[in-house]
Amino acid sequence: MENGLKLVKRVLRKKTGVEGPPHDPYGYDEMIVEKQYEGCAPIIVKWHSGLSDRIEIQAGGPVCKLDWTTFVHADEQFKNLTGMDCRDFEKAYERKKFDPIRKHPCGTKHIRWVDGYPGEYLRLCGKCGSILDSYVNMSEVE
Ligand SMILES: [Zn+2]
Image (cartoon, rainbow, N blue to C red; front, side, top):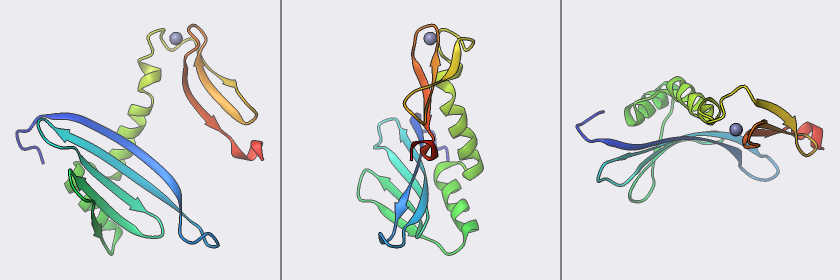
């Protein structure tokens, strides 16, 4: 995987959504890894699993889709391309997600959850008022 090139950027994203016909929608999950080596165009690897399962690669050009038949194969593909399997991805993603909280300049002792709009919860710093995290509980909204 590592080839002497300097990694200048690595971004992990997750996306969930719905695909398929409106009368028969199907949920999907995506794990997205964006990497960029010094002097090179970014490489985006997307593992889409839902109604259709595939890995998409984009490296400064059109999107290339890899289909597969077994899940084991997908995990291997993804690891070859990104250096991470799905467990590594989850771990790294969770770590990154809490970075703004762990690295908040006021420290973590003023941070607490408060209510926002109905069903909305905000994690904010009581010292400077920064919102560091939020979530919406849809079952409380409807
Ligand atoms: Zn603060």
